[in-house]
Image (cartoon, rainbow, N blue to C red; front, top):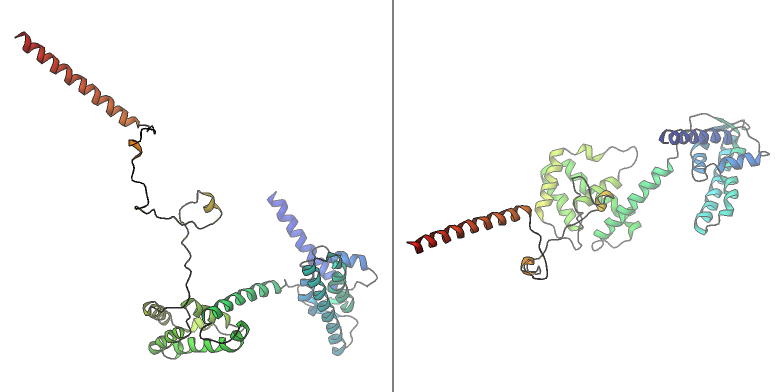
Length: 320
């Protein structure tokens, strides 16, 4: 079944690429039902493929550069209208608008361009950018929460006005002077109630495509000295830092371990634990182990032999 599923998935991927090529090449608008069927093969990913690859089409009707730009502009307007319709479909659950979205996202751009693809089909980069954007929004919200007492701005203003300043003040001293730069960075983090993880998040959020990685320019010794200095400073923050419990390294046997859940074993308080012995309770019958039973039998036999010998000695004394 796994081989069959992999084959079906591969066929579906090839079908998407072939349908995308057909929708953006010489297919007239009179063939509207086939063009709509291209969209409904996968209505979630097909508009993203068109949006990512429509700029690689060379329109056959355009005779000069100005006509090519005009076709591209009209195709972009159609894709924007399709995004508005998709927002209504997703937010209002109005699935009857899917044919309208299909027309603006797939049919109309193909009719406006009607040419040939000059490059290979590229997978939509919007998915990765959307995931990265959500991650940066979460990190920026955490940074705003940590520095909220020392900054008077919202999350958007923090990203626009403060973030670049934070990045410069926490990285430039480490590059210019290692010894004094570490103390400067630690004092700056203490000033704004930031943590060592916030420093990593600031560097990550300020890294733009095409820029040099600032982390590769900082020597490893300076990074280690910065971490030791921050840990030894004992900076007190006005918020609590959640420490995630460590996961078990042994083989998971319980249901919580199978699903990757963290379990914390609570230590029992000796003052609260009962001090009564179960064996002393008359209402509870305690099962003895086999070794204890054998020991009991052996002791009983020894007691019988000793009593017999004592009785024989006493009888002999009476006879004498």
